[in-house]
Image 1: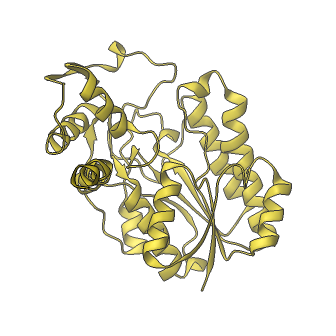
Image 2 (image 1 turned 90 degrees about the vertical axis):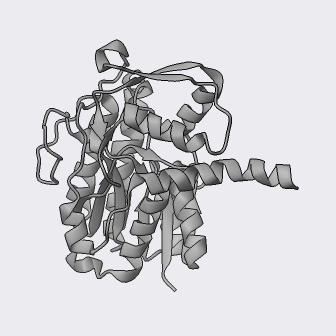
Image 3 (image 1 turned 90 degrees about the horizontal axis):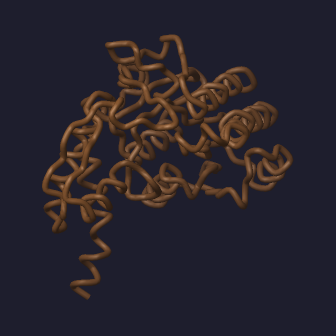
Length: 299
């Protein structure tokens, strides 16, 4: 049985991969930051020598988009230097590296979905650090797959869905940005496609950069409305009104791309994996979020 090393095992994507690997009986070695600090190349080398994995999945990342503006050193240490360390060690031991990146490496000025070949133009510290990480992976590790993902959500960690659920229980009115467009992507689907790629594909002919996201594209406002509609099936919500606002009405330390929709045609063609609608993932997320409450009520 192949052995897969996972970094960022306590992150939202990492936890979803752990869960899916258990379902599929895959030999996964999850490492959180305490066990594997990707900013420490000696630490990485020690872990590789100990476990001798056949593949490495890197989900470790500094993802606090706004906080990164005041902590650039921390963002670049993990997202750039950490990725470079993993790439160098992966190349040294001839281990294929699957590395997660982001839609935010684009500036959002394009009106059509972004292709893998489109020019990157990151506009914030987080985005710049992730782009630097991509460049390092391409430079130092030939045997890599970079998977750009977007608007990630799921039952684990911090994300838009979890934030909305909290606010909808607390506030009668929410103001949500309506002029940013992207593709919400469920961590469970990310986990499934990564593990499927590793276990069923001949990666030697498939290395490169790909876009993966759920469909269809939507706005933050429409996403929030869908969350409200789905969550209403499980809970009594305080929110009575969700009103649209523009990006300029909600200034943040980090500027967001207006359009970060990813074109996934190449991914679907190469890996022959069909995209899932994000609505399915939203339903699964809320079922898992609310199931512990239901279990307690029935227990």
